[in-house]
Image (cartoon, rainbow, N blue to C red; front, side):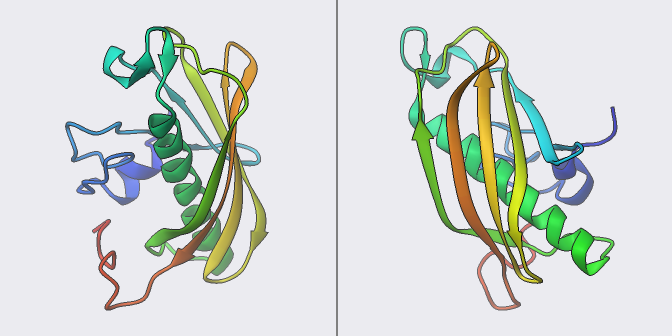
Amino acid sequence: MSESMQDLYAPSSICFGCGPANTDGLRIKSFRDKEGLQMVFQPQKHHQAFPGVINGGIIGALLDCHGNWTAAIAIMDRLVLEQPLCTVTAQYEVKLRRPTPFGTTLDVRSRILALENDRAEVIIELQANGETCAVGRGLFVAVKEGHPAWHRWG
């Protein structure tokens, strides 16, 4: 498998959800697929809300970070850049459709709904054991120099 988007473009990121340099974080790894990005995540015991069920905040972080990377890569491709622009979450929502079980690998896939030069709307789906447990939708925007997140991936 090729290198993840996070390892390729932001190896020093400390983001809780997707930062490779955050040893206490989730350290998600997003990869290109036919429609957008795909990732798998193996929850740990401390990610549970109660025995056997993953915490909704962890699910939100997974969808938020994966969606943000989907937007960044889509904008990069649209503008034919060698590096993604730094994008941040402007808005996102999560719908928890059923309890997300602990003890199984989570499959998260995303695709672009709308794309402009500086923003993208993304839909994200989280499945466990072939069943949709959560869906998310978000708006992610590229930031300009002077924004606190500028250079955060560098």
